[in-house]
Length: 42
Image: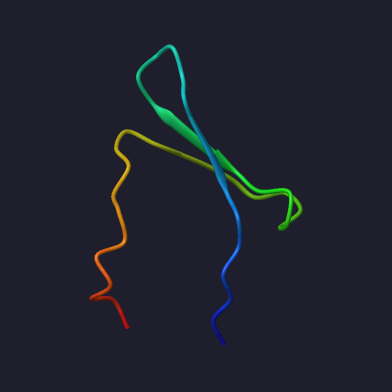
């Protein structure tokens, strides 16, 4: 099953990115880069 959710991405002072979502309780993701969806994923 696939679902689309809204996420909020902010760049942190350390240069990392933080992604959170009000739609998924407890979702927090931190990464060094942000990749766009190219549409080629299954």
